[in-house]
Image (cartoon, rainbow, N blue to C red; front, side, top):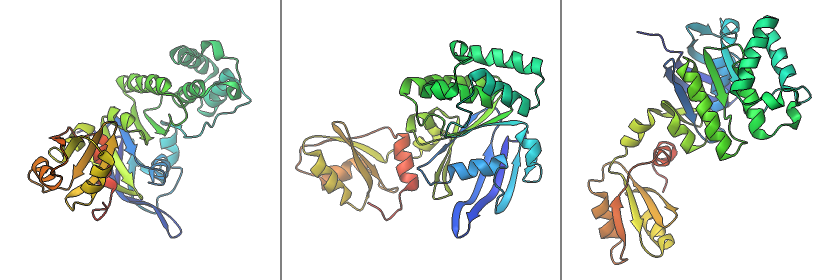
Length: 308
């Protein structure tokens, strides 16, 4: 059995009285995209930094690429790439200058760095920008440069911390195509995001909240766990219907999406459609079961049971 790229048991990280990461267990396979989905403050960045060896865990066992963290963190760092949420390259250096500098830090020879740089500049459509300063580039261009820089030394594992938070949808889509190209060549990727569509692209996914792992699995499996619990309502006065639905103890959440009201019911309701037809009777509503979405999974995993 192949050892996972990342193995963690009871990983915790405290900052004084604040528990940023709370006893997380992870097994991340090699050659896949594994996603961290969660709101700001959920512990995504702190977990990534602990796995990279940039933060020493307060407690727990961590192995990355078969090496112990933090004892062998320096060896691990030579085999990984890390793209931070905020653009971290030198804005007063050109594309070429940034990549040559990083190549020297990674220990690449001048010849190897030049060859690798030429390959990546072509692959990431940076040819016309080679001599442009990073500070003069658009958000999408800087994103491509940051990914090229993070993979310059051909790492086995790449950490991406909300890499698309400042780019438009077209650049986000193109960026994800580059990630799948990396995976096709055997790279393992751990990416954090708060976009549902990006999370659904991952091979596997962990939902984090308040430093805790709330759910873990493939997006399809996580959504399948809610089969029979999501209902879609069409009709008039949906804002009033929403208020009436939220007053029902069996309802977990309700949110309007365009001309529809999407209702998530608690586990254990045998026939959600019949229940809502009975409780919301007289409103002339069209009520039917709907396919669960990743947003439904996120709400179910992160909302307290006693919340409306």
